[in-house]
Every structure is written in structure tokens, then in C-alpha cells.
Amino acid sequence: MTQPTPPGAGLNLRGAVDLGALAARNSRREEVARRAAADPAAVQQASPFVVDVTEESFTEVVQSSVSFPVVLDLWAEGYDTGAEVLSQLADEFGGRFLLGRIDAQAEPALAQSLVQSLQARAVPLVAAIVKGQPLPLFTGAYPSAEEGRQLLEEVLRVAEANGVTGRVPGEAPAAAEEPEQPAPPPLHAEARAAVEAGDLDAAAAAWQKALANDPRDEAATEGLARVGVLRRVQGVDLGRARAAAAEAPDDVAAQLVVADLDLVGGHVEDAFERLLRIVQRTAGEDRDAARTHLLELFAVVGTSDPRVVKARAALSRALF
Image 1 (spheres, rainbow, N blue to C red):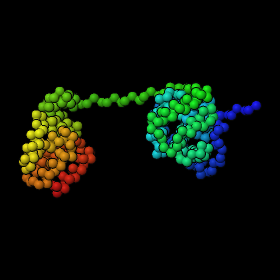
Image 2: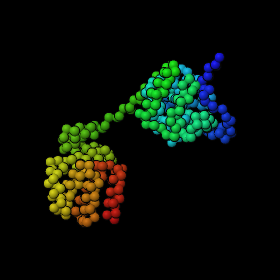
Image 3: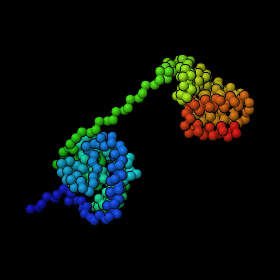
Image 4: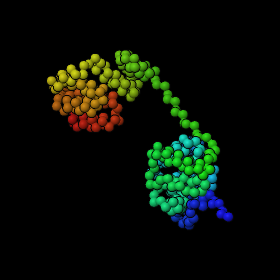
């Protein structure tokens, strides 16, 4: 009489563990423990459908594949995004399979044995286990979420054909609630509501009051600059403004109008370049007008924007 194959017999994972590997494993485990201690919320939100597998727990995890499919994910640092996709899919499937994650750096002996057993050449390595029998899925790189979903559906079909239709006990963790955003200061709210209503004068007045209360209010500075641009381009005919600027390249006022139009139209670098040219070739009041206008546009775009950083450096070179 043929004896039934015990769960896990399809995986040849025997092998000696040298002291270097043991030290590396312990060091890695300590590092993981420190990270968990530093972020207890991550532990609290752990999914019942995802477990971390160690040498000690490996046999138990494989044995559970007689009840429900097990998907083993042998991963390493650098592949965190793909590993996270698998964890999300485990929650999405709601316990139709158990995802067992094996940290190759924390479990070097187990990782090496698994790679040899499945005749793989690289990590990440992902394989399904059904009734103790391995089914390699992919190695070397994670698939997209959609490709991973299709592979998992195939695993479930194979499991069902072999009478493995159980579910992992538990429920998926509730989605983390978005932290409630603090209410904006009253004058900020007043200014933004005025902009939405099209009352730019009221918006400017509210931002000015906010700056009077706190001259370091960066949001008010940006808001006032933005309203200033909108007020200047309100009612301006784009075609006529561009034609006037082209006909009179030395007319600074005409160039400033087009710079505003460029900014509102999303042509930020064109607006900056136009004003920089004025700064470079003029002097006195014209140069100062262009410089002041450019600084205002910097505030609208945001001082940390790479385009602003680049243009600010060009402005410094032109001035000094």
C-alpha cells in the first residue's frame, strides 16, 4: 500500500547551518525587532493572511497547505515594493491563501535551502505550496499587481482541483483612517472662499490681513502673490498681449503681462526666462521692475520648486 506523502516532503530543505550564517541571521532578526519596536503601529496593523516565516515555523506553515494554499515569498531588501504588492493581494483575496514571507537576510540557511530545492537562481523567489507540494511561480523580479493576481487565481484553481479549499482564519485589517486635517486659519479660509467665488479683491484683502497679523505667514505670501497674478491677467486678451510684446520687446510693461499669462497657462519656465532677459539687458527702474515681478512669480510657484531654484540662480548671476 502506498503511503501518503506528508506535507513538506516535496521540499528538500535539509542542510547544515554554519556559524557565520547563524550570526547573520541573529543580527538581522535583531534589526527587524528594533524596527518593529520603533513602529508598533505596523505590528498592530499586521494582516492575519501574511506571516513571517522562520526556520522554526517553516514546517508548521507548510503543513497548513493541506487546509489552504500557502504562497512563500523569499524576499530581500531592495524588493520592498514588490513584496508589499503581494501582501496587498493577500488581503485582497481575503484568506483564500496564506502568504509566508521569508527574509533572505534574516534566514540565510532557509533561503539557501529553498533556492536549491526549487532550483532557482535568484531572489525574490515566490512559490505556492499545495498539500506540501511546491509550485514555483516566479523568480528574479516581482510581476505587476495584475500579473500577480492572475498567477494567484491559477494557484487557487490548482488547489481546488486538489481538494484544498479552506480559508485562513481572520479578517483583513481595517484601512487606516486618514488623519483629520486641521482647519485653516479663518483669514486663509476667507481668502480661498473669495477666490472660488471669483472675488479677487476680497481674496487679496484677506491675505493682506493675514500678513499684517503674521508677516512670516508663507501661505499668505504665496496666496497674495497668486491672487496678484490672477488680478493682472483678468480680462486680458492673450493674442493681443502677445502681439504687443512681440512688437515692442523693450516695453517692460508688455513683457510683464505676457510673463503672467505664461505662468497662468502653465509655461512657468517661459515666464521666468522672459523676465530674466529683461534683467540681463536693462538697468534702473526697468530692471528693478522685472526683478521684483520675477520674485513674486517665484512665490506663486513655490520657493522649493526646481524651476524656481534654477531661475533664482540665474537671477543672482544676472544681478551680480
